[in-house]
Length: 109
Length: 116
Image (cartoon, rainbow over all chains, first blue to last red; front, side):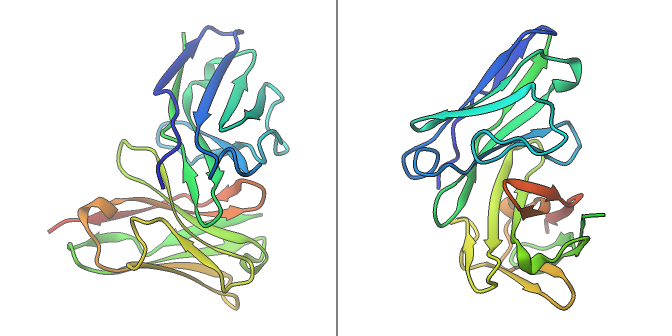
């Protein structure tokens, strides 16, 4: 049950796009289309951004998009905004358990 | 309004036990997979356990297997996490969450401190 691998940090200027990766194995990310992404601001509760690889819950801006290729999932934030500065976590179903990624801190320059 | 409210956290000595509760409103816990997720201070999110909508199937992270038990009371619309043999590694904020296409509803979190 190893955590999914995410880069510790990413950054971009307002208006730019940033893509976050989430690397797993064929037993988790690669084996199921049940990857989700969460945004967490400091001291706040995580918020669901993307589920089932590329679906957006109502209320989540379409600036957030998800995809998957093989054992790696990605979250793209387009048109970066100041309020997007936060920690981002991926999560995958793995059959008999679920597993989160290590998290990426996004800084808006 | 769909809401989850955790309770039961606090300070416990190593080796001790604690039971967390998560009261749901606005939806029926028995209709969803319900999960517990924890976050140690300054650390990332860690999945802990889930109970499936059938109420019989449960899963656990290896780190808590054999020590934690997830359950629910349909009449009270409440989720529980019984935590035994606690260690300092279990100290964290514990969130209960609803699995409805991703983890779409989260409680505010409850703090568990393990210290002598």
